[in-house]
Length: 391
Image 1 (tube, rainbow, N blue to C red):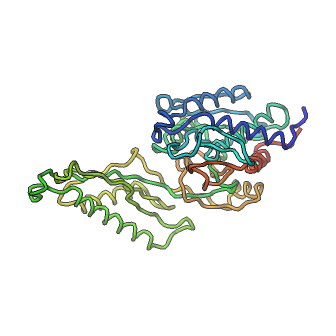
Image 2 (cartoon, helix red, strand yellow):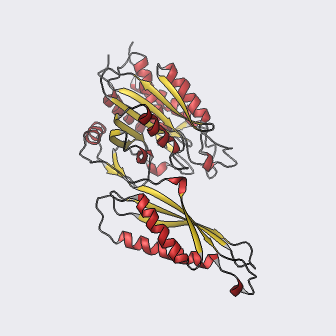
């Protein structure tokens, strides 16, 4: 069968992405009036059906009620086993301009929520697998195309479930690509993360007699300042890698019941970015002690958000996978400031990279888009990496 023309192939990728954008998959933690309750069920069902039609062995793995991962396995001709993880959820749409799910194709771009973050990679890979099914190319590597839930909020439950699925099956991957918009530059590292929910416990009283109460907000203010001092110590250190030092930020605070009541409770959220070589669980213990000491004589409880923390993701930029993708794409290895599902996979893969079309600058915006030319570029990279020569 003859191959489609480059322009026709490009058009089909853009239309496939438009179809994906039209499927609302807002993370439930970002849901609002415009999105409804959100969730990945509809796009997961679409992906399972589409990949089964392309000949994949498909597993639908429910991570949480109504929130399934999808694992689609395509057999290649070599012994290589590689995977590409594309998170199925998107951020919210309440701040977006126009219809966030219209998926319009205009001026060489595809618009809508998820167009760049990160349904673009899914459209590229499905287009390539269409080529394979139509006899236009052969898979060299056996490919596991993975759709995961919960990347944008909730502690990466889909990624951790996929890791456990691989472990339970006794499978280890040669290479794993985590899809994010990187302008087709292989990202070989980003910081890990740890979140703390701190509650300072005081005692209520009439505000005319504050001495009869114990002001939780006042104590919480001391906690905020103490944590900021820890941040200042961090950034004053010499970093061990080009990724820089860890950072610490208090980004949420809330407390008080009424203007004439001494507050008996104040809640804080602090996020700690974790640099390579740091132990996030040790960091949690140390910062919990700092927070409790600063709140004294009031008591403070400190909880680890989602019950887990992640060390940094870091690969040698001279590794075969990083160098190989950079050569194919005509790009250079980079580091990222954001986090990704790569934080979950260190134990189940030999070579790990974050890679995909489009720019992170367009992600989460009121107007989200990806250049069709970036889809074409990513297609060329994946075709070279995953397939043998055209028939």
